Length: 219
Image (cartoon, rainbow, N blue to C red; front, side, top):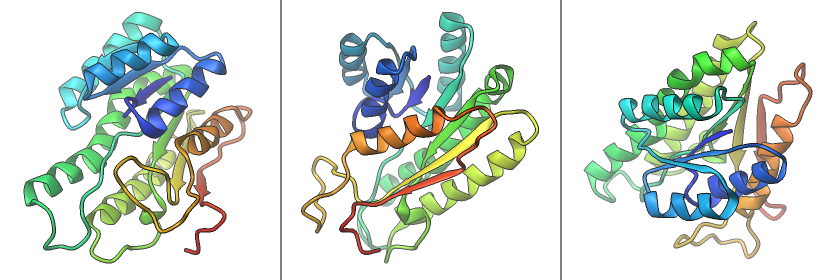
């Protein structure tokens, strides 16, 4: 299982659960120190890579195939946020978010597509509930709308090859340094269980989307 955005949060939690389920994992993210610490903990292969740079994603795939010979699951999970309000934050940070959140998913799909067809594998993509309903002043929400559409476009593109595609759309998830109005939000482990549920289905079952909210989340 190749996990982009593996250094913390949902990616790291999924890596731990994947190893428990018997997968060999390749961990990719920009943060080399965090990646290596996680690899040391669970026994995965750490490959620093920025999904905004296509040559780095290609190198990541090549390294994975050289090491393991196949890729059965790709978890395109890399992404980050930006302050709400179209006059808030730094425009360069906003641009970097769009490139990572949208182009980074495209780059991950493109670079792994052939390997997924070869293994009749499974593509899992992280979006958000913000990719189903617009959030006031949120460019982040717009990127997740793009990701939601891209997941369906990829599903159609892979149709007939046996490759499965699952979009994971979390609601409010506990995030370091970010507050929610709910007292009890989802955890990264909650979302990781959803990922592992999708990939554990029989080959003829393709769970196309999982929307997960905390019980107390209203919308």
